[in-house]
Length: 252
Ligand SMILES: Cc1cc2nc3c(=O)[nH]c(=O)nc-3n(C[C@H](O)[C@H](O)[C@H](O)COP(=O)(O)O)c2cc1C
Image 1 (cartoon, rainbow, N blue to C red):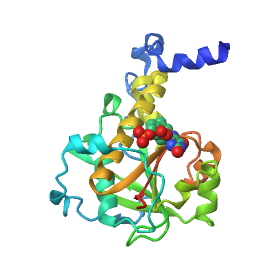
Image 2: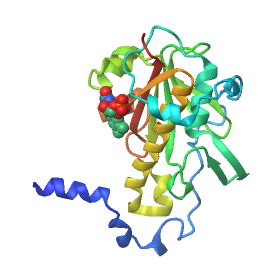
Image 3: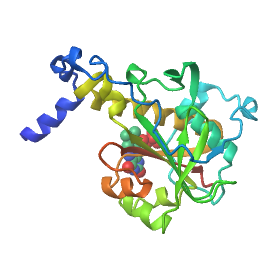
Image 4: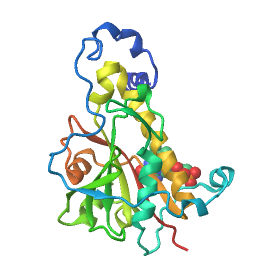
């Protein structure tokens, strides 16, 4: 077994926690808590999302059925996803469950230490009521912010995922980026593994929530780091992509 592979395996263990001096973490030293969501210019225009509860009462699919039939879907019908459905998926994956005060909120997914180091970008190709482009989800306001419109959406996205064409053809793609500092402030070097674990919870909610709406998802972890970071315009150092999930109506 090459030493390098053995070293990488250590990332899956929790040995690192024993090496972190908890009295010296940024939180213990009294550094200010990182903001709950990414800081964006104060004059950013929020795009309100429709009430996610609208029509959801009609769904009522038993969870056991959703779990039984869950599968990765890579062939999408040429049919747009509605803004209401996107609103529901964002709520299910990163929405706020409970707000105590400006520093303390709980979301609909678990997160190590409730730190929630993930940001959700949506690459939109075919969503009713949204111009194609890249958007950032604002969990606290349940709203979107337009980030930019890539010059050649399908070509850039396809290149960013090693030509997995179903991703660039999907009506929309969830792209999760980590801002590690939000986790490191409390857990220092012991943050890497738990950020990855958090992403798994988020995508599983996407799979099940999408299925309840009759949509299909495929989780995607094979991507070109630099290209996908450029695609959503994050710096690749303090914020970078960790996972994607393509979404659309399954082709018949
Ligand atoms: C962490 C993770 C990464 C994945 N990355 C890819 C990917 O890059 N491309 C792809 O086509 N499928 C990807 N998948 C989907 C898996 O291939 C799929 O879950 C697996 O084949 C089992 O099929 P099922 O989801 O239908 O049960 C990924 C799934 C997970 C959980």
